[in-house]
Length: 294
Image (tube, rainbow, N blue to C red):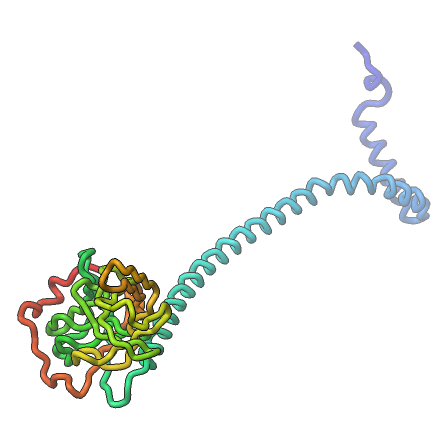
């Protein structure tokens, strides 16, 4: 079968003719510059094709740049998250230290009379018996602590030392059932006995006649009777008064001024009558070993 390409000169001759014509056209263009206008039109026609040919490369470069930017954003986001967690942890510790510092400042600036020795103690453990309100502090006989010593916080009376060990002591809170403290009303100096009710937020005033001038909101201070608590320290504020004539005495409830449920730092007081040589309780020598868990 004869085709159109099998007619005419041979393929070798066609190659020679094409080479000759190409060389002739290049020489004519170089010498005569006769194809300048044609080149301009050809370049204009070819330009869209060049742009289209560059599109895949541009898209690939744009995609790579987007992926790189996205990866950089992810890495920066993870780094910022890590920094945020570290700063949050540092801020939490800072807030805790700030609160403890404020508490210590308030404790040391509490209204302690001049000439009274005082010492800051820290809570070590809380008695886990729900019927006993006792705590353990990190000060003992070697620090001069003695049995019956008054214990305060930055707000008011907390309790008294119940037992003294070598390096720790056990404190009985004013809210304990077995504790009682003589108080007087700030407004009119009426005296009463405030006893623990077994609740951290309530004290009971015992054997108060119905006619006694005590009102809700009255502030109760330590009266100094009994030679345990020095006179003039805040103890509680009256919150409830019930005068039932069928009962011999009025029912009076007062809320402790001290934050008994948030104890951290405490203040131990010495007075002129305080013993110079504290008596060490033998049963409490190993207070560190059998202290209740907080």
